[in-house]
Image 1: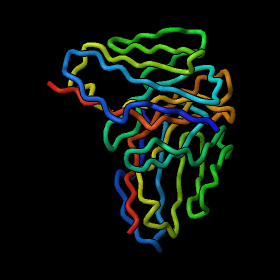
Image 2 (image 1 turned 30 degrees about the horizontal axis):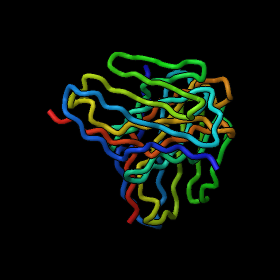
Image 3 (image 1 turned 90 degrees about the vertical axis):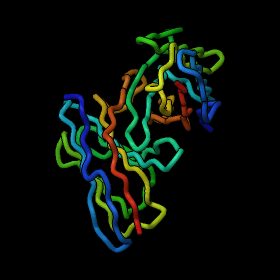
Image 4 (image 1 turned 60 degrees about the horizontal axis):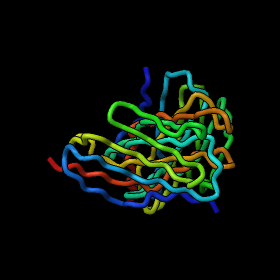
Length: 117
Length: 111
């Protein structure tokens, strides 16, 4: 199984709502990532989990809260978002987290299209 | 600061021709470089990885070159087909070990 799954595919939420994005992989990968992608822009890294521990937080606002319950699952909890947070949210996984020598080819999920009203 | 530039935002070519995409980088010392394909509304899909000691890598109709002196990678799609229409992203690992992507080149292959 070389697939990363993400749910939901689409999400519309108001600025006062609380919602969660979910990501799952069964490739035995030990690194998992959240990216945010705006239209016609490249993916921007938000968070990295390595061996179920948060290793990178790219100064993301606290209204985004990641969680890694186990090595196969990654969640992104959303609360009090702003309209400018509307974007495609991508989850990815790789065999290991980054080092100079590891070739961390990343496997991406299909993304969640988030709209904040 | 570190920069990855993909020179063309869009490339339109006739079916059967070769598409050549460019990725230039500044202030990176990459051990390898990756190319991904992204279709609209979908996540990127890994295509090829080329290491710093490799000049060229091929996979089916795809060819990648890597020149660490010029700080440039070229990505070629030979005998292009309409199904090759997509956005192609190059990606590098920075000194902080994070993978960063270029802005991408959108290729449209006309039948």
